[in-house]
Structures are given as C-alpha cells and as structure tokens.
Length: 241
Ligand SMILES: Cc1cc2nc3c(=O)[nH]c(=O)nc-3n(C[C@H](O)[C@H](O)[C@H](O)COP(=O)(O)OP(=O)(O)OC[C@H]3O[C@@H](n4cnc5c(N)ncnc54)[C@H](O)[C@@H]3O)c2cc1C
Image (cartoon, rainbow, N blue to C red):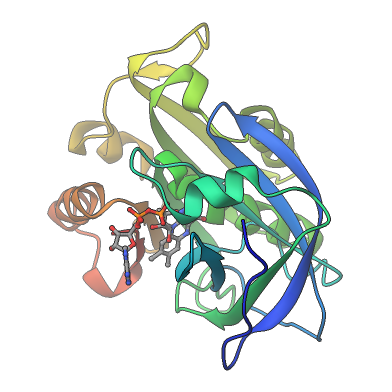
C-alpha cells in the first residue's frame, strides 16, 4: 500500500477507528482534515494509489451529518476487488484522500412524513445514516426499511439496525434472506417481490421511496412500485454499478 497522492478537490482524512461488520465488510470512521458538511445520504469519492495506479471509488456516507466530527463509510469487498480490498485492509491511523459530498439521494423531511426504504446487499449503508438522522433530529415520521441479503452471515449492521429502529416510534425494519439464513431464523425467506411490497407499503402510498443496491435490483423494485401505483417522482434511487 502506498501513500496516496493528493488530487485536485480532495482532502486528507484520517482513519480513526474501524469495525468489522461481516467477514468481507468493514466500517471505517474518518476524520477529515478540513471542515466537511453533507446531507443525509450523500456519498464521497475515495482516492488511493493502489499498486502504482490512482483509483477512485464512490462510498455512501453511512453516518448522519448530525454528528459532524467524523464520517463513516462501510465497504463490502467485492469478488474481484480493487479499492474495496484496499479499504478492508488499510490499518487504522492511515490516511485517505476524500472528495465530496456528492449525490441527490437526499432525505427531505419537508416533503412528507412517510419514508419507505428498500435495500439489497451493501446497499443498506445509507439506511443506517437515515435511521441515525431521524433519531438525532427527533423526526416524527413513519419509516420502514426492507433489507434483502442472500445469506444470513452477509447481513450488515443486523443488531445495530434493530437497536436504531426501536428508537424511531413509527419505524419498522424487516430482513429478507434469499438463500441461507445461517441461524437468523426470524428473517423472512425469499426475495422482495411485488406481492410482499403490496402488503408492506400499505399506508405509504403517498410517501417517498428510497432504493439502494445493484442495477438489476433497483429496476425490478421500480417496476414493482410503479405497478403498485407509486408515482415515479416519489421514488429515489442510489444505484451501485
Ligand atoms: C454512489 C455510490 C455509492 C456507493 N457506496 C458504497 C458503499 O457504501 N459501500 C460499498 O461497499 N460500495 C459502495 N459503492 C460501490 C463502490 O464504489 C465500488 O464500486 C466497490 O467498492 C467496488 O470497487 P473495487 O475497486 O473494489 O472494484 P472494481 O471492480 O475494481 O471496481 C468497481 C467498479 O468501479 C468502476 N471502475 C473500475 N475501474 C474503473 C476506472 N478505471 N475508472 C472508473 N471507474 C472504474 C467499474 O464500474 C467497476 O464495476 C458505491 C457506488 C456508488 C456509485
């Protein structure tokens, strides 16, 4: 691992702590060297020199801007990784180059008091920040998150999200596992499909929908929601290609 070069628009951030979430997923807490402000949930670009090449990738800010002293990102190592392996291995105390904030996947409590989130895999990271934000701002909202994971042992933030959602009076968090629960026997088994959504979105029909995950998942959720009568302009998405 080499010391990252500084690119225009980037600033240095120090990794002050970490948490291993699953076998291939890690959360890093970063302290930027310069003032950094963002909205829930924007993303940063992280740049590092890896094996002689400068690599830049996007990561959603998985912590709420109500806690401004630091920001957190959660990185799942992919099957043919570059940056995601680097960030799963980089030691605490190291520095990264970050730029941002970017993106329009933004919570706006002025437009509604009903928010419905649907996430797959590592696409759960923004919803941790949404929950922290709702709690810290003491928002009086109806808020539900559906999270789909292939395997029980790949579920990110499982205990943490269950604790957070308890602090949101109108909150609900549901986990669906598509392959093997690995002991999370309370999880629903199966994919998030239109039939399941039809039940879950009752009462949210005029609310706002936030989707995060891989492109196939996002397009299938958009199809299901629009088939169920949700207007397209009430659906926001963060797509990870
Ligand atoms: C808005 C947004 C937010 C994201 N948030 C998270 C998050 O919170 N947690 C998380 O784990 N992942 C997140 N991702 C995915 C993340 O950006 C990386 O794609 C992932 O970590 C894999 O990167 P990699 O370098 O290990 O893999 P790679 O396979 O090397 O790269 C992954 C993707 O990056 C692109 N890419 C590869 N090489 C280049 C290049 N030279 N120039 C430009 N693009 C290239 C390609 O589209 C490739 O499919 C997010 C993506 C987006 C777009």
